[in-house]
Image (cartoon, rainbow, N blue to C red; front, side, top):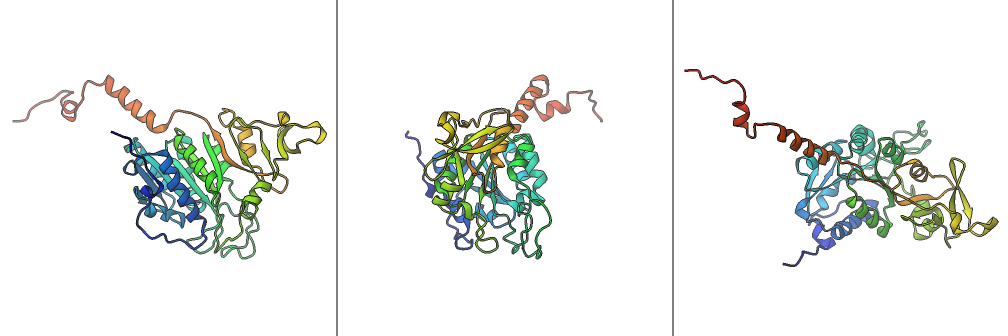
Length: 337
């Protein structure tokens, strides 16, 4: 019998998609459908879990199992789903508010435990569903409905949180960059353990232009670096720039100047156990550095769910009682007449 080949259409539900026209959620949804078709896990063996927020409507638009849960608890529910049925491919869809504010504690502990789930974090730096309050990732000084004179606090950086929680997989893409989005989503599904994909997203209503440096292909050529396993770190409109190490930090160099060649550049190794360089790459920001896109870190480690089942089997092997009745009769018993 031939193997079933799935297409993106097989993962689309019949529900009308209800997001604002131009919202980055549309692009990410399209990329997720394509990625799932490439991964090939059957729709009935896939579960998409979300919390509350604009992005958390996504399970309605998937022809898979889905659960639109409560605010901030998507990671907890996704963990339970995966441990209860480890054969399922489990995806968690969260926004920066849902995932990093009320859900922040669940986020770091899911990452720390290394539960084999795929966390897709849509980061538009604003609360969209509740009409424009600043979020945990809004930059300092941002004027919003809840900060009319500008925020007076520094934001979370998702990569920093994930790495601080001993994260083993972190990738980043831009909502409108379909090919890279599909690529990193496929890579996240192949990774065994908690994968975090940060999607840099535009909110056309409450935070339009937040990703202006990366909005077009030309913008990304100038302002982003696509990290590829085993390849030198090159970027620029004509691949004229690269990254080198300078002391404990990074510096941007121009290839050909001062005798610098591709051989002098850093080579990306997402599988390196030491996360020091991965974190530096993930945190690059400002006009002098490109934004790192692609798979930044991908390191194997035992997963929480597999360890739970391994422990259960080890305990079972040591116990004589194999059924509830055997357990009840295992100790001293007596009969009352």
